[in-house]
Image 1 (cartoon, rainbow, N blue to C red):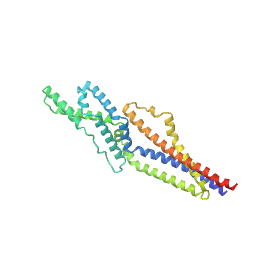
Image 2: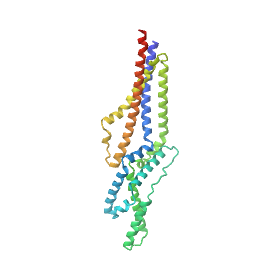
Image 3: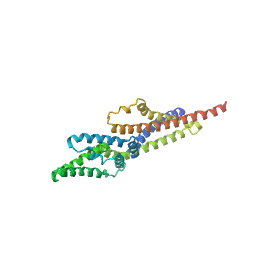
Image 4: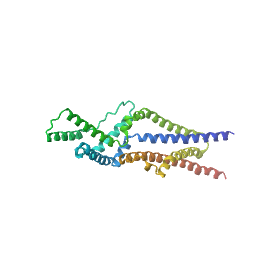
Length: 293
């Protein structure tokens, strides 16, 4: 009866260990996404600045029909190097906001000095060419054109929708609840370690056999955590992302792939460790039985 009770306890603890590990792996994969290095690497690796430059060129060429402002007025003040630096700085500022609980607002502003000077120079040169004396209407139109150009550039640079999420209050919610997610991640990791130690101590006289139940729990947890990302990759669900804008598509699909691959790799490592524990318990536990014969 005592052996039977111990067996039931081991099974329950093994199941609990598996789910605690799944929770930990999922939480750690989510928190890994909140590192600014993830987005900055995607911006560089995917050449998003080049895609943004091409999109802006198309936008300003299209706007020429209504504004009569040559696209060169804008594009001569914009470079792919500047776009990449600004996109990375934008991402870092927004992730810094999310990861700093006492931060009340995003303080980083894009340096549009070159763009402002280019548009202003065009306006004054045009006014001079037609002998028009700048007045309040002129200054108002100039300010409006500069603001519209800034909005166009910022919208194109917002490849991860971080500005949109900030304006909608979503980043503030992430900032508020992120400490709880980090706490949950550490708590699940602590619970995992406690359960491993408990399973080992329950079978103190079992020799190498003590690693069997721990191995089962770790292996099952790894397999369960790998199931969803494995299915996503095998069925190529990521490529079916609905938004087909080349900038957003490249940014978001890469971000999803980072999460999926990160979770899959971690889960596979834990599953392999669990399998090693099981193999050790089986191989080394045979020796005493052979000696008894």
